Image (tube, rainbow, N blue to C red):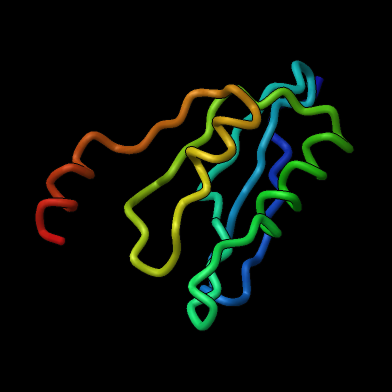
Length: 105
């Protein structure tokens, strides 16, 4: 019996952000934490390189994603949570106090 989750970190160099995928090795259910949407400021364009990296890992390992979480509002990158929700069907979540933070912005 394994009593701890498997956690895999993914570094996104442009924003200096970490993304994580973790799962229970017994049930193979897991979550994505703080997913990053690639943004090229010079071109004013978005790309899905980080999304593709996460999805490839999830497919390779056979994880069933049951949640996509943002731990906090991100000023340094766009969250890819909504796009991953479209692709995976898992619900998204963020702390309830994020609305207070958004009012400040």
